[in-house]
Image 1 (cartoon, one colour):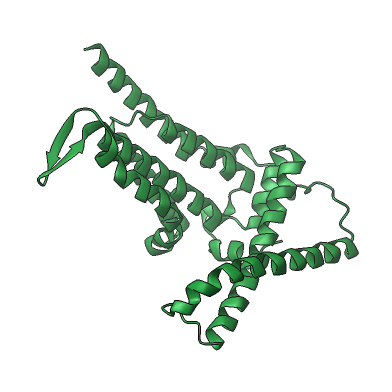
Image 2 (cartoon, helix red, strand yellow):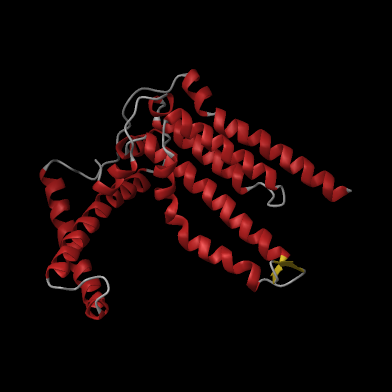
Length: 260
C-alpha cells in the first residue's frame, strides 16, 4: 500500500536503521522532535548538537545529504516567514551589515528555522528508512486510534491519485502550447484547479470501488511483524536519549544564567 510519491520518499537499504521496527522508529522520532521543540532557543549550541546527532543517523542509514536536502525543501514557506521576523518584530535592535534588525526577531527566526529543519530532517530520515506500509502498521501497533490510521492510509493513496492526474493534465497543457512562461497559462490555471478537483474526485471513487471489490470492509490496519526486542528499543532510543541529555544540559545552563 504505497503511492508513487510515498514510495519516492523511501530509500531501500539494509542498514541498522532500516532493520529497526517501524513502531520503534516512530517513538524515537516523536520523542526527538519533542525534545527539540522544548529546547530554549537561546542555547544555540544545543541545536548544533541535535544536527550532529541526525547526521550520525543519516550516516548509519547511508542516506546522502542531497537526498535529505531535496526532500526537506517542504519547509520553504516557514523559511520565508522566519526571514521576515527580524524586520517586523519590535523591541531592542542590533545592526547587521548596516541593517537594523530586531533581537527578539532574530531569535524567533532562528527558533523557527532550527526546530522546523531538525523536525523535517528527522521525518525525512524516518520515511527514507521505512516503507509507508510499515509506518502505518507501526502506527497500528502503537495503538494509535484506528480511524486516524485509516485516514493516513487513504491520504497516501489520494496523494498518488492527485499526483497522477496533475501530471497528465500538465502534459496535456504542454501539448497544447501552454508552457510555463506563457501568459495563457495563468488564465488556464483556475480552470485546471477545478478540473483537477473533479477528476481526482472521480478517480478516488473508482479507487474506493476497486478496494470494495477486493474485500475492503473498513476495518483497521492490522499490525504486521512481531513485537520489538529490548535490543531494538535500546538502539532506537539512542537518538532521543542523547537529545534528552543535550536538552537537559541546555535547560540547566539557561536556568543558571537566568538566576545569575
